[in-house]
Image (cartoon, rainbow, N blue to C red; front, side, top):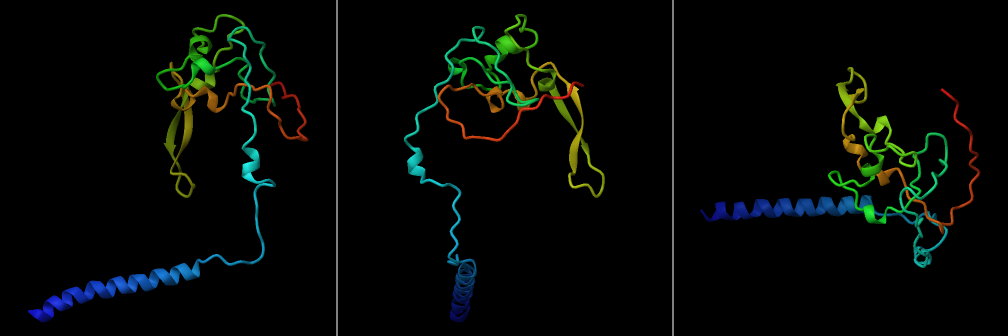
Length: 178
């Protein structure tokens, strides 16, 4: 009886020892090697960025502002007015729709949400050998915004007046008329 008890204690101790040896060998194998090459993703220390001023957004109220030009063809329109009192935007609380839902946008300054925002993806099974088991087969138009489209500020951004943007070689080209 005494031998069986010792054996029961001995097996777990052996397993723990083997696991510890395996873990230390894995740590040694994956240890970082100093090859003399340092890779940095920024040219400045992050603490140097801490004194940047907060963006100052346009202070115009909805309906009082001019529509802003798009950054490139088919870019999401920019928000030309303050949204401070409209946040946070939630699935069941979206003040943007008070003016921009197609049923409510009656004035020229109230740009309606486009039809694409009301389309829901209809998923279909992919064919054997295709990388995706499910893929978008078609879209169906619904009465309400598609679930992925309720948070307007994910794509549409209010504009700030004091943001210093880096220089770019981007050249604006006009979209072809369809």
